[in-house]
Structure formats: structure tokens, C-alpha cells
Image (tube, rainbow, N blue to C red; front, side, top):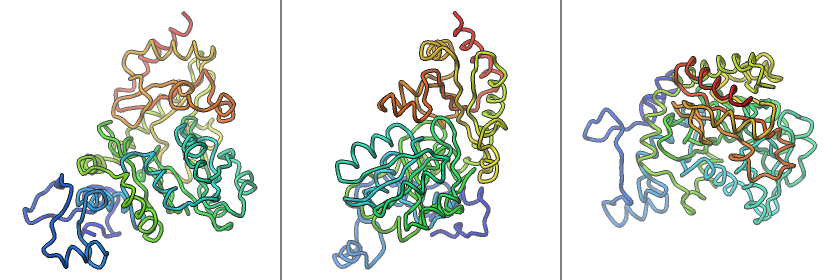
Length: 398
């Protein structure tokens, strides 16, 4: 760990400096180490490093200085002891599951999950004998009732994608630990700048670093954060052997993203709240989903466990898919793409993009209607975003 990882430093200081170890060149910015392997001074040193008797770099699949700097910085910001960086957000979820689960284990998961996460649980993990029960995110009683003797993990996103439902992390951590389970929280929507699930009792945090941690839509990556025992043990062992690793170049991009993380998240949240408030006033909009609104059913909970409400909102228009597509197609400024977390605002139709592989019944249970539109609110001028959506909402009537 570097001299800058002291807990006495504030969030912004650690976001800029944590994890950095300067080389003999005395560089100010973190270097990129684009190398496959690292050279030992002797056969004995190589043997000691491979056995773990001596720390040191071996092979960039599992030891790289640039990746390690990113891991240590993100762990510091999340309040964790160890981080493992992966090649994507989905790889982070897979790595956590493969490191912690075995044949015959059981997961209790929120039914309000990103579509590919549901497919991962229902299709891929099921092939290896891991079964999943899905429950309503906000129903704590349903979570506890779904736990079986072989339940190992409780898995959730909060806020959820795309309806921004809010889970009570502290209450669910108490339920998980009472039954000897681990609580895994996907913190992609808020990042540690706005929410720190480990401080609320979660055991593991997963990220898609491709979103707000980067902040400019440049690179794909993910991360798993938690204790040294959990993340530094079987989770790291899976990454070392199976290799769903982050590249040094992407790790360097994420380091630059972390330096401005809090500033960006506050700006995203400000824009999103203004846009959500405005959308609630539009006659063509049936409902707006954003936890910063007082009309949101978990607004008080979100205000209590988060320091901001994030940059993602969703709204529903009457007229189903045809009307929703007209709104999306008539916009000119918003980018029609299924990602978010970018400086550029994005717009998508979840039922036919991010959640299209779910059955119609599963989409209905998750509240993903044909009239639902999701926006990843960027950093453009808010009036320009409103004017662009006016074009879309007016087109719905044509």
C-alpha cells in the first residue's frame, strides 16, 4: 500500500492518490505497465514468487502494477481491504460467484436485476448446479423466507436497473448474516462517491467500471471489493487461474476516472434530479422512476443510505412500445445506446435492449413495461436535454 492510503485522508484525496507507488523515474501520473510477464533476479526468487513466499509481479493475468494501483484505490474508496479487477462488470459478478459457490449452493437474488445478470444466474450457473430464487427487492420478508439451508449468497443491485428501486442494505445484511449467508451488492449506479455498501453491512461489492468509474465510455472493466479473506482468497484464486482479468491500459483509464469521480457523480445527480422533476410535469409521461423524487416510494431510505441519488432515471409513456420508440427516435441529442455512466446522455428501451432476453413474464414481474424508457443523464446543459425530450414526447402523438 502507498503512503496515500491512510484512512485519515478524505475521499477526494484518496481518489487522486491512493495506491500509487512511484518508480525510480519519479513520475507524477501513474505509469502503464504493458507487459505480459515480469523478470525475476534469480531462479530462487521466481520460485518464491510463484509459491507466494515472496510478494512480487509474475504474470499480468493476476499481477500487474497498474492494475494493482487501481485495485488498491477502489478498495480504499469503498472501505474494503482487497479488490480484484476484472475484464468487465459481468466478469466481476461471475468471478465473485465462481470464487464463493459450489455445486448444490443456492442464491437468493432480487428480481430487479440487469438482464444479463439474470441470464447468468438462471442459465450458466444453473448448469453447474447452483440454483437461484428471485424475490422482490424491497420485500425483506420475502428475502428471509426464500433462504434455504444451502443458501450461500444474497445478491442485489441498489438502485435497481432500470426502475431505481432501493434496497435496505443494513436490513438485508442482518438477514443474510443471521442465516450464515453473504450479502453481495452491485454498486454500479452510485459508486462509492454516493454509497458505500460495505459500511452498511454488505460483504462484497461488485462494479461495472465501464460506467461511472470511467465516466467517459472508453473502456470495459469490472471489480470485486471486500475483505482480504473473501476477495483475497477464493475470488482472487479464481481470477488467477481462469483469467477474466483487466488490462493495464484499462486500469490506467479507470485511475484517471476515479480522480474526478465525486465531482462527476454530484453533477450527474444534479442533472438527473432536475430532469426527473421536469418529466413528472409532462402530460405525456405516466410515471417517473428516480429515487431523488419525493414521489419515489423509497425516497426516505435512499436519502438515508446514500449521499446522492445518481444519474439514471426511467419514465413510462402511454402507448406501449410504439410510443416509446417514437420518443426515442425523435431525440437528436441523446445517444440511443444501452449503456450509461457517460458524460453524454443516453436513452434506451429496456424491454427490447437490456432486458430483451428475459421472458415476458419475468419482465412483467420486474416492472419492465413496453412503455418504459431509461435515460443515463450526462453532463450536458439541462435545458438542451429537456428540449431534446420535448421533441421526443411531441413525436409520440404523431
